[in-house]
Image 1 (spheres, rainbow, N blue to C red):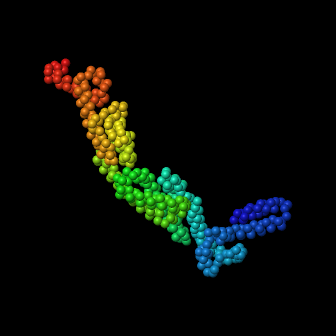
Image 2 (cartoon, rainbow, N blue to C red):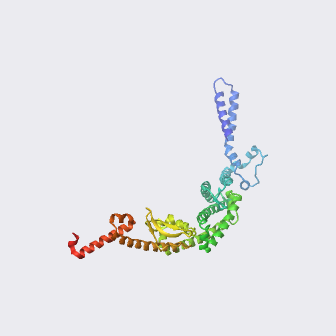
Image 3 (spheres, one colour):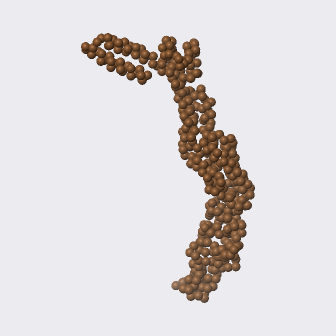
Amino acid sequence: DGEVKTLWKNNFKTIKAFSEEGMPAAPLAAAEQLKGRIDAFKEKMPLIASLCNKGMRDRHWERVSEMMGQPFRPTATTSLSSILTTDLESRSEQLDEIAAAASKEFSLEKALDKMLVDWQPLEFTMVEYRDTGTHIVGGIDEIQLLLDDHLVKAQTMLGSPFIRPFEERAKRWAAQLSLIQDLIDIWIKVQGMWQYLEPIFGSEDIMRQMPKEGALFKKQDAMWRQNMTQVCADTHVLAVSELPGLLDSCTEQRSLLELVQKGLNEYLEMKRLYFPRFFFLSNDEMLEILSETKDPTRVQPHLGKCFDGIGKLQFEGDKNTITAMLSGEGEVVSFGEGKVQPTAMVEQWLLEVETQMFASIARVCDEGAQAYKVKPRHEWVTEWQAQVVLTVTVMMWTLDVDEALRASGNSGLR
């Protein structure tokens, strides 16, 4: 079509040049004759364009043959002149319709091919996870961006009336994209749960205290590692989506992890009900304590949340016997004879610490009150803890007021 337009422009310039006065008549006549032939050929261009349509396939030529009532299919040896001598021009409207459908079908087919080509190089980024000996999937932003775009395109294609010739292929492709989306969604969920629970159930103490949930997590962990080994063998997204049973495996793993998570929450709730001050701690903080029951000093960073005013406990000896409590300012309150021996049941010995806390404060307040009677106040204040000073001072002031009222009535307050 471009060549014909160029030829027509050159011919127009030629006619204009030969039309000037003094020019020979013969060249002008030849140019005008050529113009007539070009104009006649231009009228054939829509027909030629339809016949040369890149989207024309066997199915379209069959429709053209039915329209003409005889077999018709141009080949490499078919001349243009032989086509122009047929009566196709009288059926140009029908031919245009067939060619238009072929163009739209060709456009959809090319778009489908391009989507497949776009996915060929895409791979999941697999990253070694700490010292677990297995992998996790890294960033998937590029994959998700392309997936979102192609899911919309695939659904739009399936809604086109021109998809029929390769409808099954388009449906298979749309189903594979949906599978990739489902796989990514559940994979990321399972990975997040596994990353949270793996260090928890990596603790022997937790495994011992929660044998049922521990067995479930071991089963899931083995499935996860097997899946990651399969994925790492070929990280291309399309190859991963075709791994047999991967989606079902991830679905089962999610169910197992949900059971483990439920059991873990119930376990932590039980601990909180036994020792209510655990409600002041988050799940992660509780698990940090419970996963190291052999080391009772691991509670130290969290004591401030459980006991307002206690900075830390004083552990002594090989058995980490608790002999005193210290405030954030460093004041020490001894437990006296009521020492606490930590055991594997953290909530149990913390409850004993709470009991000793009340008993010890009551004891030192009583001792401080006795000392108040025999020591000068300026010396007494520096020898006792701030809470004892405040408590005993209030006690003594109340006692003095009471005695004054009893001895002199209201006038005793003057």
